[in-house]
Amino acid sequence: MKRLINLTPPPASKLFLGLLPFALLLLLYVVASDARLAENANDKLLPAFSQMGAAIDRMALEPSKRTGEYLFWQDTASSMKRLGLGVLIAAAIGLALGLFTGSLPLVNAGFSPLLTVVSLIPPLAILPVLFILFGLGEASKVILIAIGITPFIARDIQRRTQEIPSEQLVKAQTLGANTSQIMVRVLLPQLMPKLIDAVRLSLGAGWLFLIAAEAIAATDGLGYRIFLVRRYMSMDVILPYVAWITLLAFLFDWLLATLSRRLFPWNAQGAH
Image (cartoon, rainbow, N blue to C red):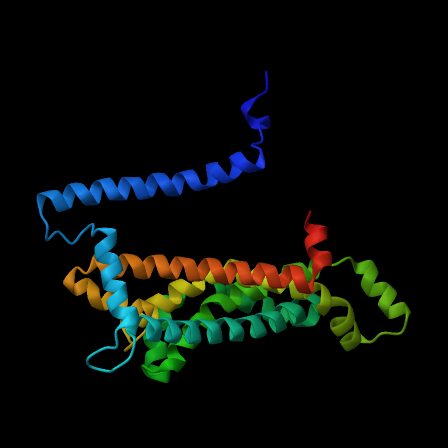
């Protein structure tokens, strides 16, 4: 008799088991929504799928009477621009900090304690400071995302750099490589797939900082729209926006994973 811990589902069953919780959640929502709407047709807490479809159809396919823009796509474009810039800046700075502190003992001694302290500061706590310094425009939102996830990426790259076998560094020096050549030709190629992994892990926090910044000071964006319509209990807009954010986050993660496998197939093989 096999123990439960040793049972592995076949591929077909694995797919079914993966989809089952989603189907159960959808069924539970439909039942609860129908029950509430049966009691009160104007209930806004659990709108029917038809109501959510009509709301998104209105926002995605009909131009705004005030601005003439398609609000759903404008919000998406604005949020993606802010998130993309913030993550790109964080990845560049995090890679540089992690590489230098992980490979150069002198830099590590000087900057590693500061990096540790900075990573402990709640980024949302300094959001008012960013608004004071950079205003309520795009810069403060992008900087919040960058500040929020840079320490995580930097510390992860630092750790990955220190995990690279020292034998590789000794061999490179034996062949006449100087410090910059070792960093560029030995360390950096091995760190690039690790950087993608670190970015993937930090995206959840990046979305959090994006939504928070847009909710406080913005005129468009996914977070801005959610907090704007909550005043009117517009769950038919909020729920689809939340689902859309979840789908975008999933697509970002999938694209980064695919990019890593295509550019660094040796890393994917080593992981297995």
